[in-house]
Amino acid sequence: MAVRWLAGHRVPGFTGAYVSGSVAWLPVETELPITSDVDLMIMVNGEVPPKLGKFRHEGVLLEVGYAPLQPAENVLASPALAPGLSRGVLLADPHGSLAALHAAVAREFAHPYWVRTRCAALEGRIAALAQLDVSRPLAERVLSWVFPASLPTLVVLTAAGANPTVRRRYVAAREVLTRYGEAEFHEEALDWLGCAHLSRSRVAAHLERLTDVYDRVPYDLARPYGSDLTPEARQISIGGTRDLVEQGLHREAVWWIVVTFARCLTFAPYGTAAFQELLDDLGVGTPAAMRQRAGAIVGGLPRLRQVREALMGRHGMAPPPWTNTP
Image 1 (cartoon, rainbow, N blue to C red):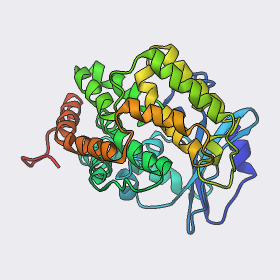
Image 2 (cartoon, one colour):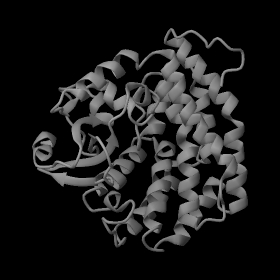
Image 3 (cartoon, helix red, strand yellow):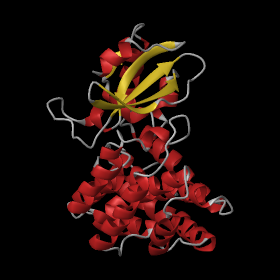
């Protein structure tokens, strides 16, 4: 279905396209969950068009983005590009350049140097929380905090050679950390977000408030996050999150509730009081509290790096040739 859509979609400099995201990591015989979309990355030579985002085609929810064609070294260093391209689910490659790039990325993807490079890129974004601008409007401030605050999970997944997924990142990190005897760190990561203590009933209540707001948002596809808030995307943002809560993974669902709530508020002020209550529950309800929490997350970087090296060691990767791991 994605290939058929691609056949009618060409942009200047089109070089090829591949499946990114979680679908690329699934066995080919696996049925696509109803709460998943299919991420397509289109590579171009020249100017990169704006992201298309989510839309439905032949019953399947696609999410389409663009990236510039670049050397393998650049891709290998990218936490966003390397995982998908390493899988090699190529949908279009008219000149063979994408197949060559995939081969180079797949060959070096698990090399400790590139694993640490991708982890360091994520850790750099966490460190930037030290300069968090808490003077921004509420929704923007929360989005600028909550994405870096969740990145310890992606460091864990990257170090373990697992898929650095988006919505389910806390669930996936929990599975990895439990498997390798580091379950205690999962509690620390939840505590950095502020949801380690939240009950299932409390999270469910916040999700219901979000659902009411989501269904009233006057979304605009031309604006940022527009395609993430459509009725078509509801099955993922609301339905997928409800599934996690019902499975007892309510704390792991909180991150996406915060993200989606904040995105809704960038369109309209519906539910501001409910959103504020959620932030209060997380202990980041004021600019000062959010700044303090950001500092605590930055302060946890040495611990995160310790866990990163432990996970890499369990995969047979030698420690780096320096004393203080960056």
